[in-house]
Image 1 (cartoon, rainbow, N blue to C red):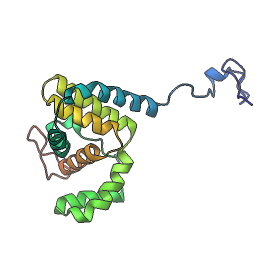
Image 2: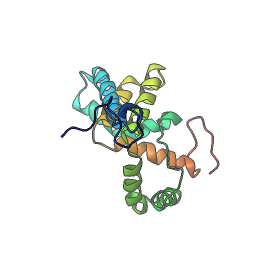
Image 3: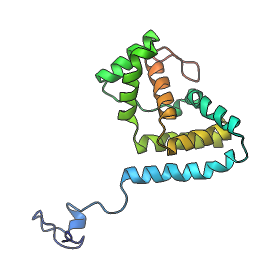
Length: 179
C-alpha cells in the first residue's frame, strides 16, 4: 500500500501537508547525485585517454599516487575528531612504518570514502586541469579511478593529507602546517 501523497495531510498529526512537514525524500539522494556527477566527469575525460597504449595507461595508473601532492584541493578532508584508526595512521606515517599503518589506512579510507568526497576531489581535478595546473591525462586517469571502485586515488590523497597534518610533508606551496 503506498504512503501518503505529498499533498495529503501528514500522518504525524501536524495538520500540514506531507511535502511541508515530514515529507518523504523523493528523487535521487545526495550520494546518488554525487556518484552521477563523478560518472559524468569521468565519461567526459575518457577522450583524453584515447589512443594511449597499455603501457602508457599503466604508467598513468602507477603515478596516481603522486597527483594529490599537486594541490591542497586534491587532499581528502580528514575527520575533525581523531579516532584510534586515524591516530594509528598518523603514528605510522610519523614513524615511516607502512606495515604498522596498513590496517589503519584501510579503515580510515573506508570511513572517508563517500560519494561526496569523491565528487569534491573530481571537481578539484577538473578545476586544476582547466587551469592547466594538471596534465589532462593525469586528471582523466584520476577521474576514472574516482568513478570506479578503486581506492588508489582516495588512499593517496589520504596519505598526503595525514602526512601534511603531522608535519612530515610540506604543502604543495612548500609550507609546513602546525599540527
